[in-house]
Image (cartoon, rainbow, N blue to C red; front, side, top):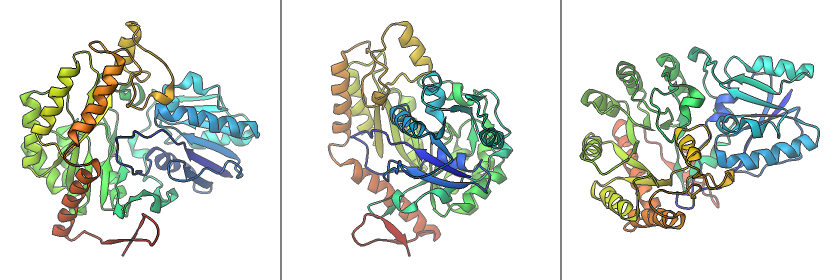
Length: 418
């Protein structure tokens, strides 16, 4: 049986550095498929999609809302040729009702332990329109090592630099942040994978640089400590979302290879200032994630916020415009207040204004978004600041003997390990 797995292209933000990370959803999904499946994979963000190849079943893994229009276009094409199409992934779940119009089946929820039944139904010609496991979470012991063998590795290097591989140690999130759809998708309960399973997967990844994509590692102190102690002997270097602001945990994180963290910057408070200073004191870099357009933001506030970010010396900053994705608390609020401007999903990138701000016009918010990027990076480009972080990780790798030199292939911006 032949399955074609596709990760659709989406419009990239012009302000972000131009590199591609290997997608996480497709490789996790691939791990749920029987090994006798003849699986082909295309990440349309790095290679051209062949729409004329043959497959028994086409599966689209769709993570982002702004991927959805392209996913539906691809699905419509294959269905016009008589192929069966299944849509899955975060965005397919967020846009379930619309997705039904473009697929033979929509898979809701997590796939571990479920795909054998789906494929049996397909073979029998009785594929269900919906497989709904959205509130029926599988045992995390069923989560196996992601199928990174389906990736074309050479596409995920940037200017001769080995980028990070994505991995996760838990699912779900006990926090209910206003712009986030995780409570709807993964539930409000922290669901850690067995640490020995996580370590086994980490060992299997032929890349020293990782991005631990968990919503937050700061959900259970004892689990976090055990995880970092177990990771330390591997000498991997990793990036993550927040870790606990605790001296013991920060020390363990450093010993485990913490390189830098993504830290939400929600205001200009002393709490944020101290938080960033403590991370830096431990030798952990910080990339601030900053949402612009909240109800207390006007132009002057955003200018003060950018000044604050420069003052606390963030290594990197990523600015986005508040975006009311489906099934988030902020969308419920803005819908109730009649402030949603459009549902053109391709504009839901985090870089366009799709709602009516409270204290400025849509044009002003768009202008301040550009101002924030331009001002923060006025002294040094995004690429240079990112390069500085990579120089730091190279120094860490040299200290513990894990650094592997790379060389460019002639005529291409890709790398080969020596």
